[in-house]
View 1 (tube, rainbow, N blue to C red):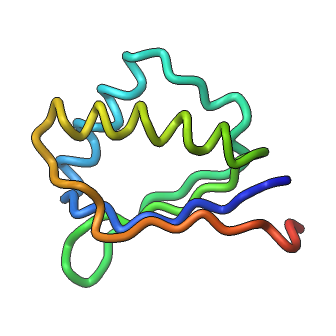
View 2 (cartoon, one colour):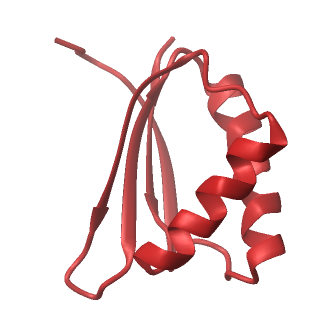
View 3 (spheres, rainbow, N blue to C red):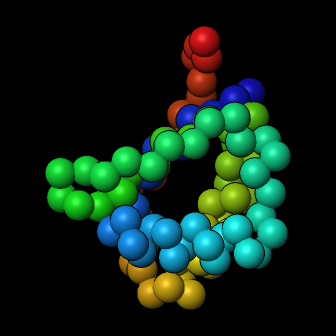
Length: 89
């Protein structure tokens, strides 16, 4: 079942870009990711919304992101939710 991953990252746009590059260079697979958007909140921190084909694939990618955050020195996300997708138009 598809899942929607919503993350308040605690990362600035510049920090997000650094993490994104670390994850990309790690070879983490995004083949099952159907949608990704990163937006800047009112506090200047990035929010991420993604749709994945399955919870296990979203969680595996999340582990690669965690490692990237650690390498860049960014704290854990303020919040993260994995929600079952009800409708995807």
